[in-house]
Image 1 (spheres, rainbow, N blue to C red):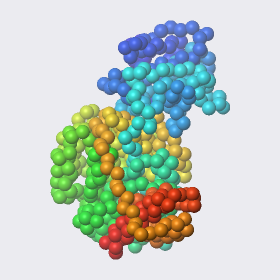
Image 2 (image 1 turned 120 degrees about the vertical axis):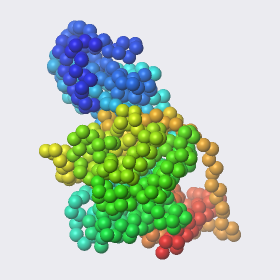
Image 3 (image 1 turned 90 degrees about the vertical axis):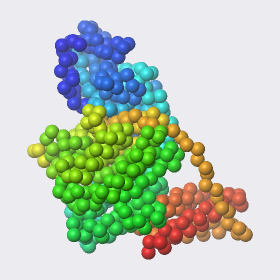
Image 4 (image 1 turned 180 degrees about the horizontal axis):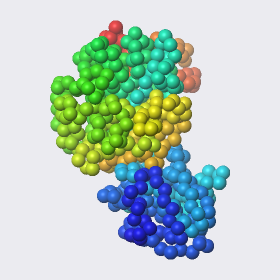
Length: 554
């Protein structure tokens, strides 16, 4: 490669380099060849795919080169054949002088979105929506690099959240102290999930703050009430973080409050077992989600957080399910110092990581390395996507590891330490799309519902659609369901959802809520008698299931 480009290898994923009086051309084999150019020509955009995955579809790692014939600033976007993909921020904003080439670098395992067919560069001064027709330069993504799917082809989708940190606000004795916008951000996260229509939500811990045990139940109530009052109607599954067990002398009680507050997987048997860890099987594919919990207490750097019983359970699940045509996810809260994502591995800024010398941590690490095709999703440090500590596989020696920032309050690094300054307009998580051969974790700001191209990651997938049996509707017998009767039942369901909001994390509550949302705005007079009977029967059945779980837990 031309000597002017040799320093590119050292750039970070968000770096920009200016190269004077030269441009580059995209060669058929995927390399970039520098060429001298005329300053009179139009802006030009080229893409060099790099790394071990440079030949694989969907992998964005590489360099985007933008040549400008004039002194100008440009915004780069992922685009389909018409214009910029609407749910994404610009890839980058580049400034280049006349005859200069600016460069943006995509990092390791970053993803080309499923719907992207082009990259476009649009003059930053333009006030028009960025389209292919008004672009200053267009790069056509080679067919072999396009993922081959559209977003609509996803087998299922979910949101991955962490560190919500409800903090005494709604029911507490005092206003929030540490997490000023946690309730508003939780509501925004749920609105984002509802707007996307995800199939479920996973959270990797610290749903509550637990600064004072006397207020812990009130924090769970606030968490549940916001969920109940949202338009989100699908399941939610949580893992247990260190704030769930913040009061060290009360860990057994706190773990039980987590079990009751989260509902685990909604199974009476699972809840009765009184274990804070559980698994969920995605019904359309058989993909496995394993939810772990911290059991030692508030200080992961000090305590062995995983009991032998929990690690035996995890290992047995991995042994039984690994290599059988399914994706497997471990959702576990605390990052490991110097090992996985979530903090700088050479100069850690976060002091509360799991000590890798602890016996349970060493065994946990051994599982991450023995089963390289699983995905570990963590949280804990809150560190903003912009710090770029979000994905690693430890140079291929471990499984793929994804770090969630924070719904409640993403953090930055100031003077070598974590800065917890509040930002009303920043709340972060992932929108995850599962395709047959790939999984894409789209990093997003939940406040404005935009995704970050530089912090969107791709992992090889291994799953397929499984035949589903529709759950038959058992129709009520000898019941005449008039329009008025159905309206009365809907009003009763709305009341039940309000009374039983503390079960909003439970599958039974969400199933009733989803059924209610399906019918609540319908014109009952326009429905046929059979349609009203079906609606009535479904609602009555869902109410009965919620009553059953409520009675079992009270």
